[in-house]
Length: 312
Image (tube, rainbow, N blue to C red; front, side):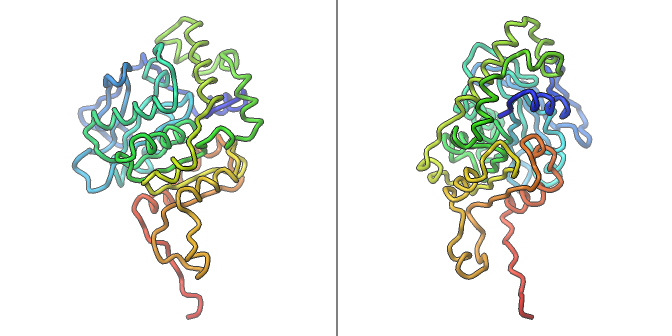
């Protein structure tokens, strides 16, 4: 989810997004930072752009699917891709109307975007992946785990909610006032208009995003409990996501190990992990790669938490 003029400015600072008219990089000899595979696939009526970093099928490590936030694209995730690609294959793609995947008259929904992600994995012959999403992408990751549970090994939700009331009321109010004029002169507007110069098309696209994020999604507590994937919930203490909502997600996913509460030690790998970063906003979260990568990698690799001896 992205909202308000302040976050538009933040998106510009992050480098905006790439255009569906931009050529897809497809180097014959990939080098660091470049995908080993990239291109377009026909997915649910879209010409969906994707990138694969590393070799699928030749790694003992489960691939990681990264899902960008609203208005963001594969290009916005380069630092995250670089942080993880040395240890595991990474897949990243542009959602409908984002980056190189052009918009269509098709309605936008978290459920539809999750089905697109599942269809992409199937097209790439990936039966199971770890899934990590930021903001809107985090909501899509949650829907993917609900709708296609067999495809999600581990789940990382970053600055995302499973229900509309997970956002502060001020966030929802800001979304209500979002319109195409807020993006005037930004790279987001410019790149969209490269492949569709019709101003009405851009207005329609922004309106779709406004409706999508204004309505958000409504995953029930029972659906959250039923997700089989181990889950990591990450928010900032100055995020648009209410910390009590993040705590509720953590508990619904099996967090708050009662044995650990009683003994003071974790004796088994927990089903859920909760991270609340200090002095970190919604946009700020996207820049916390160096801090979060070791924590996320420990989670993905099922590293057993340490219990240091205090009385040696």
